[in-house]
Image 1 (cartoon, rainbow, N blue to C red):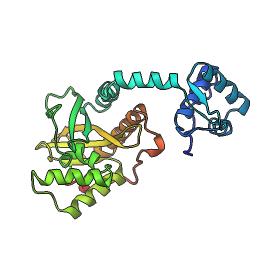
Image 2: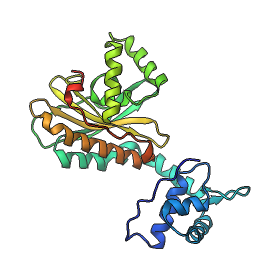
Image 3: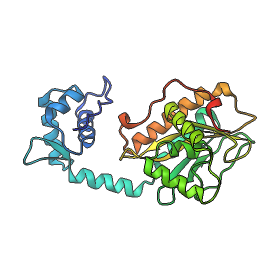
Image 4: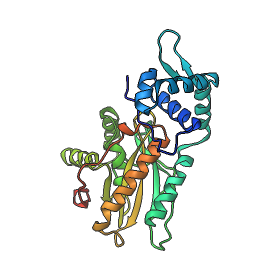
Length: 277
């Protein structure tokens, strides 16, 4: 049974609604079912309180109790609401506030890229522009390579082995691939850092800095990050920009249903010298 994520409640969030939301969130993280004592331990609540909240949620159809085992799962009404949200709120709209925040915090143009698994490519699906007169624009809503730029390599680095091989095989029909050893070393470095940085790979004179975005199934679904004119980029600004894109990509992943414990955490940050130019 998967571990239950600890509640994000703070000391002020002790009312019935906050507790019920915490219980519902914890139940939704356990598709195989969760027991009362597990919920109580994870949420630091008395078992009697958890039981009472579960009964209320059951009455509303938000939680269901297994008739053969004392475990609780997400209810049909909760699943119906979740499905409607997923169907009516595309990733681009969910990502909007995170892109807005990215630009506010750094005043550099921010992009959301989405992985196209059927084509083994990506598309630039949404962006927010900085106020600087000088910037770079990327072609939107058309398939582009995963090999080029931090936008693509931050996705490629987290694909499973089969999907990565398929993507490279497709690219091999269009161009000469970089040396396999160098590519794999770069992808490993990206995974270790938690983000990718590139210079002039997709657009000459542009620096890209992107982090992966994950979906509810734990698979990479895209990337979020910045494009910065090279003359405005300073190596000393890389750590701060990296923290921003990792944080924003992680929070967007959470908004898309990804479990926090399944998302990458960066080890000791490396500088842009590791990026393939």
